[in-house]
Image (cartoon, rainbow, N blue to C red; front, side):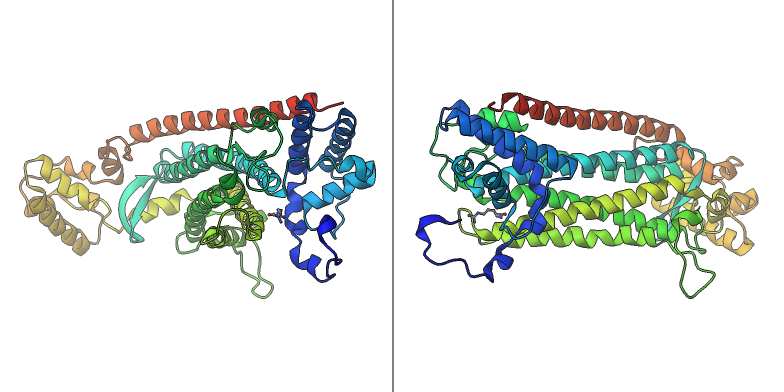
Length: 481
Ligand code: ARG
């Protein structure tokens, strides 16, 4: 394969060490599209004769159809997916025809073209999955707008919040994850094709047209940069890892909430796992695995950063190690997203347990202090007096809204009968009436805002899907016949 410069056959032990085929076989369809765009622009520029161009395009189209149908044989024993495609073309068309394909192109611009196309598609599919998960969150949140739970800080009961408010927190976390993925998408969406090995193609190909035929929004500015950097993979993987960190927090919380100690939600048998030894056990393995996925995602970020660190320009074979960690991160995120989707869809809210948890922890003590502030007591003094009320309730073994008004008035004469309503969980939640707060009216507005955000997100997804489809249709129209 390496041509006339080589006088010795490759050492048979080398191939297995060099090969990236087990990983980059996932780039098959994207590399075929890249090759089709390349042949098209070579033909359009009159760089290669019409006949080999048409033969190459036909064979590549057949291979693309077979690849999409999953019927293209992917024999091992090639160095990478690019050599596999070249060898397949040679065996179908003969070396004289197939030999035109690599004109003015290197595997260096080829591989990063295919990789960018693949990453774009993976971002779209992942955002699609996250959007669906957010949809479930919205559905579940809108079913429980009347349910209160303790909000926790330091995992100690803090203040009552609406369950819907609590779940919407995850919606906005996921919304930022999607924002980071979409932002990264813009920087992935750049065509490196035509950069050659390092210096740019030696032939007058129309790079902008190639980019359009592949669905890239723009072309790279510098051939050395385009072939040597993989910061887009690092950036996307970091965004994916951020998503995984969020999903692991939610998974952990759901695990906690399914314990007998919390019991805030129940999960049906169908999504639980048993023990091979303990007959009574029902375990949330699905959530535990979702929680664990963050490790693979974060590991991938480090792998990519260290791969790039200190690497001299331009292309180095180190860069072949870009695909496996990127794939690992996406797979981890797909698993965690799907697992949480399933759990969020099937979990059963245990309203009585949530209501019971609002008792006993004096969660509305802040409200006692705020009540006094509204009647002219400086907050620090109000805080001290509210502490006395808590002590009184503790001694009386009752909740703050059950303490007799007399006990309140013993602490401060400013307390009136309406304090007993103000210090109920409902009173406390209703008083948090600021944008972003947990008052029911605010949460209803937040649900609306979240729904509107989800609509915009779905429109983006649809646009990306349609753009790619249109580009592929244009490409298949344009190929030489
Ligand atoms: N499999 C290689 C990769 O993933 C393709 C590029 C090889 N280029 C080279 N100059 N050896 O990076």
